[in-house]
Length: 448
Image (cartoon, rainbow, N blue to C red; front, top):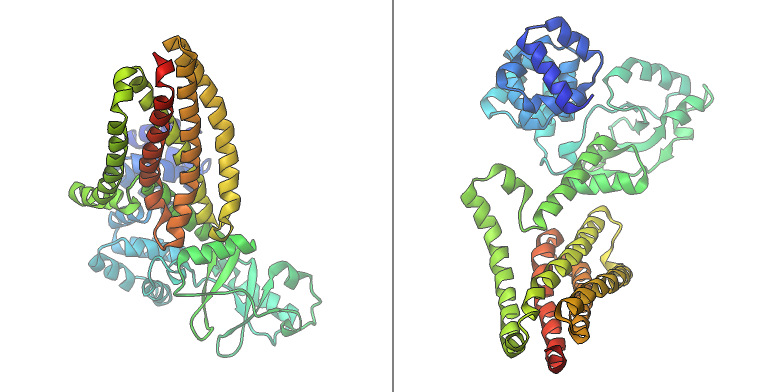
């Protein structure tokens, strides 16, 4: 069902106070569908919907929402109701929601929760939210290496409902150090009398709790894992980071990078007031303005050419815009590749060569088209040659700069997403106009 249609149906049901209709609808759609429309409802509509939804769907719905939206809904509930909802959520999701609540309300809710659930959340709150510890869940399954397979399977049945995932079974020594791991299928398919220590995978992949969340997410992606254990400095198992949390981290990182390519910042756009946003973006604009002044200087050096052939000025915006798009496309590809690990600064020549070949093909095609337009418009073939040649050179320059600037920024320790867009465009204008007007000056006698 389309979001617009679902929204209209839900609003109709709420307006006519058809509780049974809401319950019936909840049997046809899932938490992700509810999460799409809840932000579009008014506060009274949200309150009514939460009261009428089946109890088991409310925690699932809150887990699908942004933490601040979920926290807003939680504040509309009675404290004991909010505590019950958080207890039914995975600890890592519940922690995100608690963290989005005002401290006083959060503490009040935690006090009303089951002590064990509240302790899990308090432990997770102690970690930086952008660290592996901040996105891990303590809902993992661990066993002793001395158990036999049939004993381990019997133990799993007792705790399976409390675990976030059973993809891997972790093996701990008596002091809770991580010493091994077993994929669930390997455990199930093994002989009942085999001891765990005899066939477990020793020295499993792990990540430190103070490592960044992106480090954990990339480790999961690069090793094709469904979960990765999180340990402290003494190798005590603290929790696990699951693939769904890793996907959220990488998606947020990529989205933030693309916003920064325009000289913005995702958090600033969402949380800060206009003055703070302007202060964040202004330095990059001033930096590009200084570079663009060089483009103005280049134009002034060739003003006699523009004066003699005024039609040249009509094509300058076209060359700048098309070349700028090529550069931004190249920069976007490289920034995303750097973020996902598919592009590496140590192999910069491979990416630059590929982008130059791609830009050359596009530049020749666009140069022929614009050159033909210029020749027909001016009734002079040399004029078309200048326009087409200038666009071809400018697009090649833009593709090169769009590839190199992000990787150079990364190598120098700067954020490639922040520098890529603004500086690529500015440098491309300087070089593009210089090539354009230089060619025009060489052929000025043939353009009139």
